[in-house]
Image 1 (cartoon, each protein chain N blue to C red):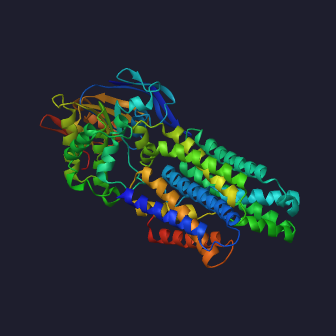
Image 2: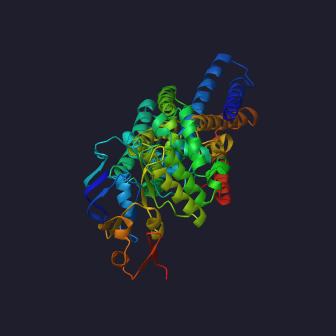
Image 3: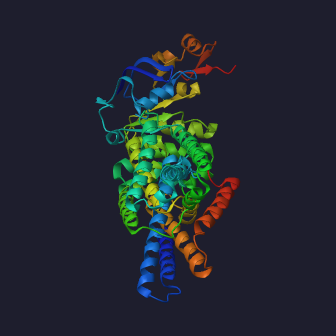
Length: 314
Length: 255
């Protein structure tokens, strides 16, 4: 029963969140709780945003190995960070106003995503493969530009860029978190309403149009939602490439249904669970800082290879 | 009636259809035949609005498809396109159930369930209905998709090479089934338009034939008029013997 499995996931997520909040609580309780609650909220927002956006993206493209990261999102984020450091210097970069920088990053990434999508879809070609290929090539271009800029900046400033290369939940700005949370909740509300349409989209373009769905318009709207979700979460904590892939595959495996009304919440909760449980383990039990995303990337990458080699993804 | 007027279509540099005008009558099965690359599938996809009309005009029972919403068209015609596989993990029954989407838009009622059950029985899918689509053979998938098109409950049923992947048992069974559905005495006669490669299926079952060559209509009419030695020999560019069996043409194209 998919309902039961969803309930179980919700229970696990609640337990993990409670553990994260209350384990080893001593000293100034109010202060620590506030700190931990902010961090927990960031983990939840990022997890839910990445999990659901990946499932939607895979449904649109009809492919289970693709994630928004392959469209060059992460590469664009890193390029932006590197360009900022290059132009402003390490100190200038560190003293940028958080809210403005966040909004700018989100807007640039959404703009770039929509430009890419609209450019290729607007010609009436609906050629998903060409769009993906262009995305991959842009990703390589962004990465190369980033590498080039990193070579010519000061080594001490390179350290600043390096800090942005892996996702960090260490210091999350409450204002940025509020904006990201609001965007995520809005996107989720829309996705929830059209979960049934998503089931039809998964049948492919021909079948969906045959059943009377305004496919091209719907897909453009969905891509905008995906762009928004990925942008806010990346701008909030940094790039996590493989988490989406990991949880989307798990969600499909665990729920064993085609219905997005189950798949979306499952993927969102799984991603949040991986992040919250992982962060609890590292911070509370192993007493390590800011290594979670590295481990998630490592395990996610291994899992990705496993899926490809086993031919479990088509 | 589907009326096609002055339809031309180009993809990139190549002209796929040149000024095609044809009528698909309100009778039984209409078969689109012709050599590879003649534009049969393109024409069918244009009628089904899977491709956007570039020039010309297509009307279905008097409704201009360029001015009718996709949603309304879904209640008028069902298209079973050539399949490229489905990404979701779907059971056959779920797939056939999607045929009812234009009617219930996400909330199936008892009526929809009944139609789905009828479609499953009618296309001999009872034993497969709880199997996952990706565990079926190409031919079984093909049947499931045709059943989905049937479940959509439309006047017009468009099939793009429905016999692909089917063995002779299932190909004949599918044609017999579609033929029965299209007879005037059927409870709700459907009008079927199909692209057929194996020309003897068209000869045996179709009521009307449209032959395309190089993006233009080469011939159209009843099977006995179109499926003749001169027409077919010109159409396929080879000498083709045509005999007669039970009052219908029998094309000996393989010897």
